[in-house]
Amino acid sequence: MTPLQILTAAKNGNPAPRIPVFCNLLDQGARELGLSPKDFFGNGEYVADAQLRMQKRYGYDNVWSLHYVGKEAELLGCQEILFADDGAPNVADFVIKNLDDIAKFEIPADITKHPAWQSIADCMTILNSELGATHPLCAYVTASTTLPAILMGMDKWMELFLLGPFDLRDELLRKCSDFFQQQIAGLRKLGAKVLIYSTPFGSPYFLSRKQIETTVMPWMQRDLRPGGTEDIVYYCGMAPFNDVIDLVLDELQIASHYISPLANLAEAKQRINSRGLTCGVIDDIKMIHWSEAQTRAEVKRIIEIGKTGGHFLFGTGVMPLAVPETNIRAMIDAAFEYGRLP
Amino acid sequence: MLEAYIQSYNEAVFETDKQAALDVVNRALADGLSPEDIVFKLVIPAVELMMAFIEKDPDANLAQHFMTAQIAADVTEKMLEKFSNPPEMIGRVIIGAAYGDLHSLGKRIVTGCLKSLMVDVVDLGTNVSAEKFVETAIAEDAQVIAVSAMMVHTATSDRGSLRVRSLLQEQGLEHKIKLAVGGAPYRFDPELYLAVGADAWAPDGVTAAKVIVDLIREVKP
Ligand code: B12
Image (cartoon, rainbow over all chains, first blue to last red; front, side, top):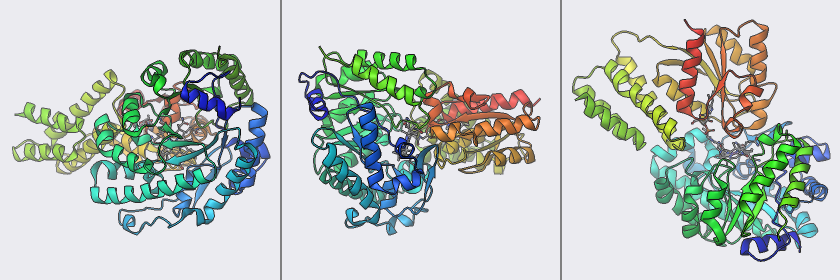
């Protein structure tokens, strides 16, 4: 079976030789090609090349579209990204500097015509032609309720979100949701098969369940209405969300859930059960100092919790650059070994 | 009378309803309570109650931390202006986001909680160099440097907390100035604070205020 078929089997609970194994190496690409992160992320061909090389070397199932969250801000007018040699790129210029900017803030009529989109398109086109038929191509989209964090800063957004003025908040949310719909349509058109819906404000770590139900849910529904949720993975930026799994299944019909390493995986699996795909995620920040044996033991623990009854995937977060290659290798080997299905 | 105010103030804070909390404070003032009473009998106990609540329920959400900090800091600031004598502050903290880090929310929540506990806070903003942290701590006579980092590389960088530690060491200041850290990576790896040379860390804003006050007490007679 191809990795794409293995993923489909896991989602539907059909027989397969093993569980799917996902590994998200985004920043590692620059190191792979010996480039600075800025040069690397500036060219979609480099990113595709690095994704293909790393996938080949380690053998995991997925590859990634060109992605750092700041890219979304760039598509919306952000002028400065702080690239670091030792870690992920960070938004350094806020498009919305004060509340008056919200009225002036406009979503481009067609973001795929924006110069910043070109490198994404280049990257996806290569990945799609090389692996599109056999491997899941992953892409990332930030939910409308979280996107403002990178447009105005998290503290200003939290304040606007909780304290208003609510007409301004909703105006911003509408614009972000319009952007979301364009972005996800563009990525699907380029061949993205697994869309990571990044929605930390849909996590009880951020807000109460009541706030999620009343304020966040309608926006999530709006974000996702066009195109449906079959290819969507619910992801809260690694924040836990067990308490809203039912809500997400019922109200959004999202079946795939990326469970935080800080959450109780057994409980999550029990809640999702055969209704969808439980993704068991390793704490890759601890992998920085773990030994290979510790890494293996943790992979084993996660997979043993999740794999009984199928409907399970093993994955990572945004792997920090400081994770030693030996641990990546140990993790992947262990995931294939323990992830075998009877 | 005071009891009733305390109860409705606490309810408002728990419901993250800022307006309701401010209404309680205004009614209490109109009723003749002193600004000192509002801070020491209403606000600080509410923050302490939140601490106790969070100790029992580590799942208190970020909105609650944010609003506790926001409301408490706001009310305290307004009341301090009305104090008949300038209050005695517990100590002084220099806070900022680590070098290369532009995340501002964590530091804002911690700052709010500290202010409401009568700690003076000097906020250096985001992307702050280790040199700047230490220089300011010396110039301002602070007892604690608090560094917030939301990403692994900014938490562990040798230009971040590790450098603050080595500067403190080189200048023989370790007995006078303590180093506290916090932010997402520390929550994923609770041992990480040791690897970056910190004296303490905390998983949330309310606990952070408590931990930092303890550090101040360690160095300030
Ligand atoms: C929300 C979120 C996002 C949002 C908004 C980000 C933002 N703030 O601008 C979005 C989806 C846009 C996002 C994007 C990214 N994110 Co993000 N994100 C998160 C998430 C879920 C919460 C972070 C946050 O804002 N928390 C708000 C703060 C206030 O909450 P807190 O940490 O709980 O704060 C409390 C304590 O830490 C403590 N505290 C905080 N500071 C201090 C200081 C002291 C001294 C003390 C004592 C205590 C203390 O008190 C606080 C209040 O209670 C975390 C994972 C998580 N579960 O925490 C990942 C996380 C921070 N993100 C991560 C990453 C990698 C990114 C990206 C770089 C991804 C990418 N490749 O582009 C981008 C960067 C975007 C940018 N800024 O340019 C990683 C970082 C780890 C790493 N690998 O380096 C994390 C940890 C997820 C993970 N485990 O992989 N993210």
